[in-house]
Length: 270
Image (tube, rainbow, N blue to C red; front, side, top):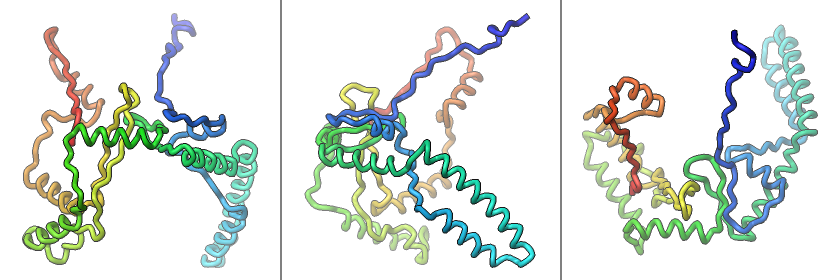
């Protein structure tokens, strides 16, 4: 016979990444830390004072376009919803004040400017990382120096743009003349780089993220990748989508005492 203690699942303790890591000399108040701990995806709401009145007027304008026999029904529905929104708004005022959060955000931004700090993200999670701007720039420069990048004293973007246009004009069988505009960035810029901080490693190195979206050949390269994938489909024999598929594949694999599980990681893709 099972007792109540036997049916209760054992408690498990999970260690999660912090939402906010401060690697600068800035001192934050409790309110500022609370706001930063809400993460990068937190949305600060800022509604106008008469937003409910405006909502009611807009609803009434829309209702007047309906058939006369349906208007009263929808007026009643809108009235009930607005009443509920009004009640919820009053409750939020006691527990959550957006104006205070906006003021707190302004003080945080002012501290960043005064102390020349920068906000970035961590590599493995959504943690906010605050670093001095000089330290962040130093980490970016160290990555560039260690990976044998070549310095260019002129901006080659315009020259590269001309080459892309010339290439597109020379391949009418691949790109129709009416579709040329789809594969040309009208105002291209050189790719930009930013760094995600690896909090789990010593010296806090960065993982570089390069934004190629506005580069001259981005759209053209995307087209070629689609063409190659369509013309030469390669079987994903040694690829997995996620950890769930990995577990499924391992269950189907005969594992002997001499088997070894090896995990390889790419240290640098650039």
